[in-house]
Length: 146
Image 1 (spheres, rainbow, N blue to C red):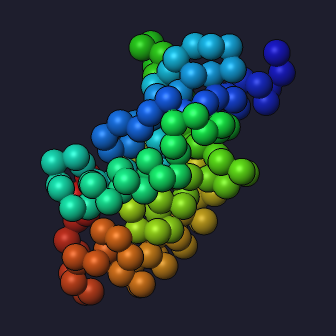
Image 2 (cartoon, helix red, strand yellow):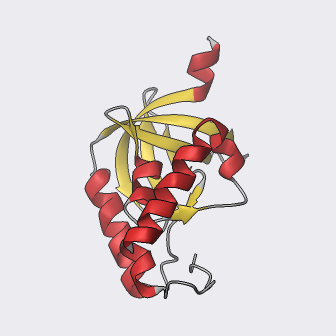
Image 3 (cartoon, rainbow, N blue to C red):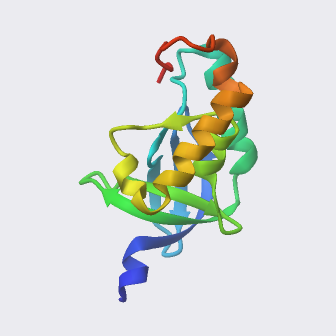
């Protein structure tokens, strides 16, 4: 097994859970839970924002979709934390760019190669008041609900 195979997981989406968790079946047939790295979607208890974010995630990752996961960590429970790619595009980054997610300051270091892209995407979404940024008044420092 080479280095790239340790980092990349070929999988098929089974379903999207609440917030930033999806379930996949990897290329060896194993079912795994994946937490989206470097971002946070609004918590399921914050209704309008979380519903829109979950709907967008379902739209981007319908059941049966082939994905590539850039694995950044894996815990004892076999849950992967990773960046999801569809057609060579990061779903995680797209969620931030469209205002459906925010950068997770605690885990952005996992995406060090693309950190600048995430920062620019979030700044653009804020400036355009997309998604979750619609409800925040410019000039305030209100925290985004997780």
